[in-house]
Image (cartoon, rainbow, N blue to C red):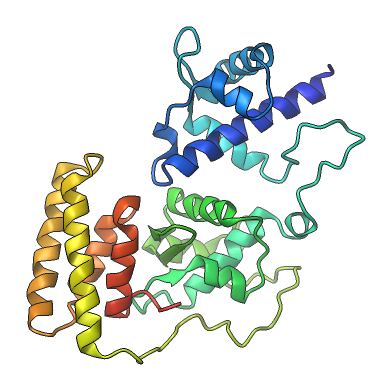
Length: 305
C-alpha cells in the first residue's frame, strides 16, 4: 500500500470518529470516548489497520488513547486538522475510483459558506433575535451535504466565538456576538484581511423572495402561546433536574430564569428579556434545546419556521 492510500485511510478514520462522537453528543463531541477496535470494524477496517492508524493518530496528537487501545478521544488538534482537510474526499478508495463528495461540495468552499452565513446574520445584528442557519442556507441556496455539515459549520462559528448558538435536532439558530460583528466588519474566512460585508463572492446565489428569514407570523392567540410556553418551561425544569451533565451553578441560573418566566406567563406577559437570558444560558445544552426554541419563538426572539 502506498503512502497516499495510508493517508486517505487515516483521514477517513479520524473524520468518521469525530462524526460518530458528534452524533452522540453534538454539544461536546471532544469528550466522547469510542472503542477503537469496534469503531474501526464498523467502518470497514480490520484490527491490524485500526492499530496502525491509531498509532499514527496518537503520535500526531490528533487522538488520545489508553494503553491497549481501550478508548479513543478526538483532540482539539485533531479537529483543527479535520478543518484543514475539509475539502478533501472522504472515501479511502483507490485513485481510479470516483472519490469526490458531490458537485455542490466542490462548487462552494467551506470558507465561502461560513462567510455567507455570517454576512446574513450581520444584517440582523442589532435586532436581538436568533436566526435559523438551516433557513439561511436554504434561502441563499448554499449547498449542504447533510444536517451534519450544517452543525459542523455552526460549531465552527461557535468555537471561533462569532455566534451564540441554540442547537436543535437538525438545525441551529444563532445571533452574532460582538466578536462576530467585529469580524464581519474587518475580516473573512475566504479573503483574509477583507471585510465580509464588502466582499464579492464568485459563487452563484439564487435570488429568492424568501431571503428575508424573519417570519412575522401572528396567527396564534396569546392564550394558546402562553399554554405552550408554560409546558415548555415545565419540560425544561424536569430535564434540568435529571441531566447530570449540566453544571450545578448553570442549572441554578436556568431554574431562576424559569421562575421569572413562569411568573410573567401567569400575568399573561411575554418575558422577552428573561427568555433571551435563558437562551444564552442554554447554549450548547442539547437536552433542552427544543423547549428553549419553543420559548424563543413565543417571545419572537427566534423566528417561526
